[in-house]
Length: 403
Image (cartoon, rainbow, N blue to C red):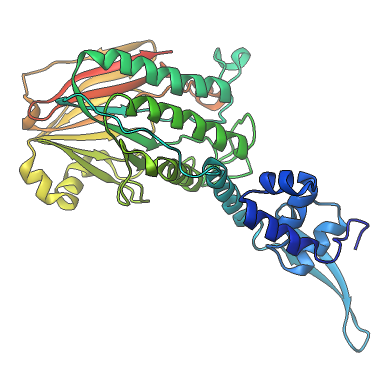
């Protein structure tokens, strides 16, 4: 053991203080014990003694940051062994600690008090879909022609929401569907990688990105809740499979006391595809990296059979590709709109009313191309989008705020 050895009872005291005051920061303020000292003792309570001792001997404050070590030991016969010991719970513990502390801090003073609000009678559903924001993505102007970081992402989420609500103000909105997830975070852990391990250019730590994204989305949802009742729905995604889901759970917890914000167990689940109904409109929502496009209509019929029979307007909202691509799928496939480098093509074709086919629409992203996308000429025009749907006639308007 090093000179950093914990005083007798120090770990137990730290646990008791944090349980009493809710967070390490609050316990530190109440007890006068410096935050780094109290945090090191509290973190030590979650690990086996030998992990704590090894981390302490190496001067490592948080045992989660110790991935492995060698231990020299002897048996009762004096035979020596050199053991390689791995820390089995480091990454999982860091993740669960981050999620738990984030929720605790958000609710430190109890559930937020949102005053009751009377909404004006409306007619339309407004879908606010801030797709593929990628908090922590790094784009450098000298390489790609764009600058993107956490601050830019935060600005585009909040100011983009304000702009969309202002554009939609001419329509009487009855309800808002606010779509969460869809690569809100650029990476899925402490290492700069996606869930599957693909390296990414990043700016900041996962902890900073998680908190920044939480704060920005919370502000955006509050803005929406001033207009109409809000339903939250989460889409699982490939860059941040676990952390993106956890972020949505945090938001659901904070808005649990809000009379104008709803988040059902189904809407916030880890299901790959979600369905949502508004009047005669049925929506399927998924990230877009999973089931092939040609399978989506069959999946909707199979997974939402009752609603398909009762709704004449069928829609899929997809994400993932960062550019606009809209198609009508019925007996054949007709592409009505597509973003290309430097231009957008729009084709009208023969007249086809909303109820005669399923509409598949990929939502634009506010995040610009990073180095890899720029090298491969996957260059998107950045924007955020919302959609207005009439309960009988289907989609009436799509509104876009460009950046």
